[in-house]
Length: 268
Image (cartoon, rainbow, N blue to C red; front, side):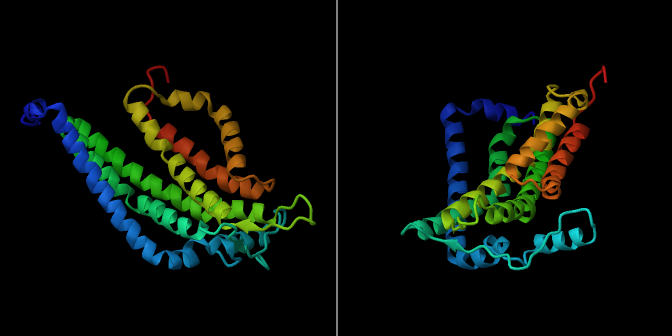
């Protein structure tokens, strides 16, 4: 590291700009290549992955049906006859959704690569002990992001879809769900859950800087439970306590994991 510092001092402002430009070019090229590749196979991905929650045989629905059938006091969940049929009401929607979904999925899949490229750019400016901490943070960030995306896809979005697709203000008003609306909700919930699952990483970083201690989580646990219940209700607007708990419990678990990762203060 002693040899790296003089090299960093010799780099001018424009040298740093050139280094950043090289990183951004590699990221953009990788995104373009991945987007083109996904564009070619997107019809298959739509049929087998993105539209899978539209059918009653989706894995979460079968699990809910088995769980509720074995517990008498829970509302009974059924997969019989459930199917969401999407419609397209704009001439160019399917083409633009094809392109935009290819890009967003490429960004999700290349998330570790993007972090790695950013790491290459900032690593020379860090001391060895700082590098170890940042490496750990990047690794945890990647893992938690993908866990959040998985929870969003397998739990949060299907639960939200089942509720909203079956909800009627009046039986005289049938639901006709547009492809645009479906994809907006799908991508929003997937990415929101990915970001929410970064909470332990943010808490760990703030704890490392001395800005957050374990006592904060203990003192505000009751407030947090109420706030997280409200957040779960917003993400999954359903009056069913079972599905509400399905969304709330993972988020609350993140709160407890965050509390465990931050250090204790001298007064704790």
